[in-house]
Length: 545
Image (cartoon, rainbow, N blue to C red; front, top):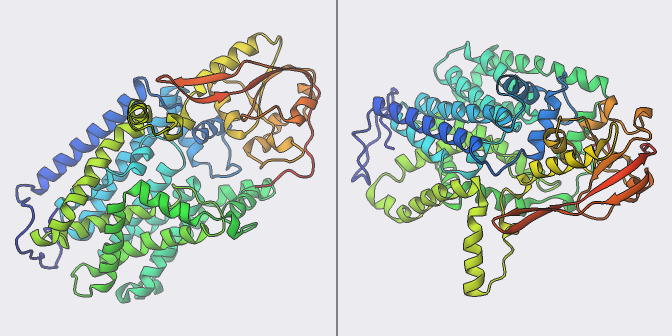
């Protein structure tokens, strides 16, 4: 990954290189890029179509259920993911593959943007290919190329805006500003955090003298106004629904109700090292420090651009982790530029043979680990025989279910079949009632006929959070049309909640439904047959987050 600069800057000189890549011409780099992306995409499609062990995640199923009720926006997120899934399912059907194919497409498109941005900044196809390959050994990005959540479209929009901003800043392509604004606008319609991209951009433009003058020109402000105008659907929907999203996001980010006891900083920090890999994490830190300190680097302005976009967002997410629980995927957009920064660091600072030697074992170990992790990430049950071997050999008692990385994605189709059979035995117009919104969405997708399902959590005396199901009038549990009907109730795992028991004339617990993978029970579902629904009304304690 040596940098063969096509920019006005002179190419960097490296004594005694650790590797010789002169054979890797720009044309060959582009051919390799196409081959890598083609094989990667075909591999994902094959995985999804041949005995895929991972059913839809709760979020994927929820977004699919949203797509059956297209609207200006939704309780916790913007509308883009629902429209993308509906478009895909219109072509491929309401299937697991139909839901997930867009994630494969977004993953490939984002990799192309990694290549294009790296080449735009440094004029090197070799470095661009290296950055793409580096991204393909990160477990977080492997999962993001399969699971169709809000992250793939938002990540793509973030990447596209960054690529366009680089053209506007360093090549004076003024028409890239409105396009960048539109990209962030679409990103916001997937995930509200997309608007924070402007914070990193502003920090760079304030710190960079040539860019500072551009703050007096209309380009960047046009971009911001365009992205702001594209928030209209979300604002209109929220105005109609009591600003539900605002309250939800405020609680989730700790802006309201945040406290140190709710934070998970150490868990967050450890999870980031885990999903990126300790060696790559260290290289990102060193690359960032080097970019800030090395004033003689001919690409310093462009390196600081990458630092500003990535590190600013990462630090904002980290600060939230002190006051509320941050999910492992929240800082993912930061790594779009930080991985390019790490690739540049490897190509320039570690290029010399003596400099590279101490890192060689650790780096290739990370590559091997990343490659080995890919099939495990696709089906972590492949580890079960190894765990049994360790248990038998070293008498280390490990429950395989505890290391099943995709455990939460297993068994939903099995549950759907089970609930479908029970509904057939319950007479006329039975319905499905669930403890939480993810179960509600999963059963909506996997139960025969894909019925409307109902969420009970916000109706308990100690009410759980509101969800999109509380926004839809036809999903309310105080509807007269539900009175007297029978139901199958899907519990969370504990005993029957007293609020559910009171809501029916008679209940009967059904045999537990184990999900068995390679001889290991990875989870168990509890269900009840419920007769004669009396109705449920929401008390004043229901959470609005």
